Length: 315
Ligand code: VAH
Image 1 (cartoon, rainbow, N blue to C red):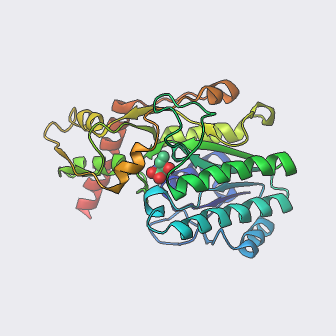
Image 2: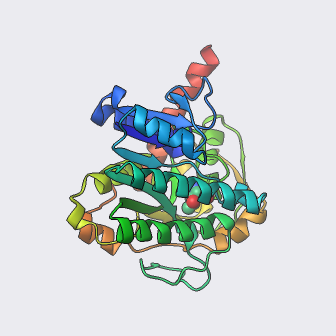
């Protein structure tokens, strides 16, 4: 069976559905710290920093794969630096140690473009750039990547990882990220409200549509072990765009959509990240290729969110 931590989060919500579709609903043990009615796919409450609780679930459900998605993201993480480090690393050690002890076949650990900082090239940032992140979240992901490599090298634990760009999806709300403006903007457009963006209009960031991010995760995890050459984390590229570009894309469907700009502390986080990245290794090692470009994303987001809001207005 497959254990998912952080199953109620932005990615977790959709990844759980995809895993249930591929492997059967009963084979996915979806857990999150909070079990809430709106997080309908979350089965069990689990604090991923609690070793006893994690080991109990691994034993009880004969877990053979773990997707460890629970973490505090970049923007929220800056509000409480030491707690962010503690939660992100303590949960990582708990999962890796339990996976090692119980001989779990594969572990997925999400990293992020947040691992890059000023020393990496701003454009087409390569896989093996120098990593000097400026957020606690980024520091925790660099450390996590090194620990993933350590557990693979020392114990043979098959840990696999992707450096996700900002993920855009309509099925779930993001929580505490710097790239989350790219989700909120579509909600405002569909509700015919103006959008105030906390980034500058020309701040480009690497992004990926949820369906591409989930497919990349499953393709990485299904790839034969000998094809996985990177045991820290793979750069994952789909597209890059600025707030101005996504607003222009939206205006193809909502011509009267208005965007204004009022930058806050998240602009400096975004400035520390690459504007675009290279994922040559992911293409070579496990044949990654994205499908969704900006207008495809806008079309999907606006169509699906309009359905959601129309439904809500009828309730
Ligand atoms: C964040 N969405 O903004 C996450 C991600 C690349 C960004 O790590 O923190």
